[in-house]
Image 1 (spheres, rainbow, N blue to C red):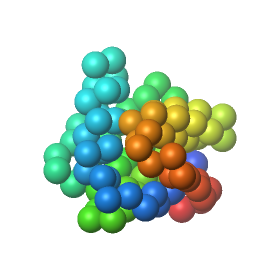
Image 2 (cartoon, rainbow, N blue to C red; image 1 turned 180 degrees about the horizontal axis):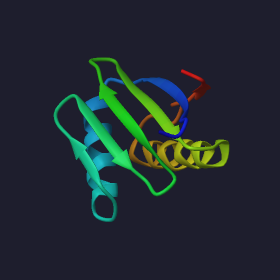
Image 3 (cartoon, rainbow, N blue to C red; image 1 turned 30 degrees about the horizontal axis):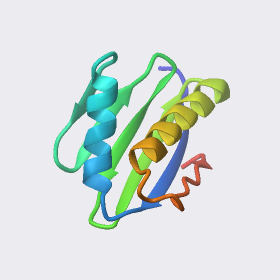
Image 4 (cartoon, helix red, strand yellow; image 1 turned 120 degrees about the vertical axis):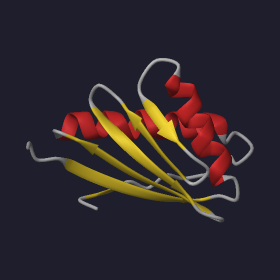
Length: 99
């Protein structure tokens, strides 16, 4: 099994479940996704992101085979989350490598 690089981000929001489902449904039109009320996973060509919705946070763990793929998973997930969370303009996503 090849080594995976990982990063994680915990985003404070009261709408974690809604955003998680929106992300999964959005990407699900083109790539493999799965989700329920509390957890989801999006599988990109370059890696994947696992999502967990809590009452006040959206936790995300990105993984990929290399740093370039990991950065792309982070960027794509981040940009789409912020687009869906336009009512929360101060939302920040702070990815931490090696989580």
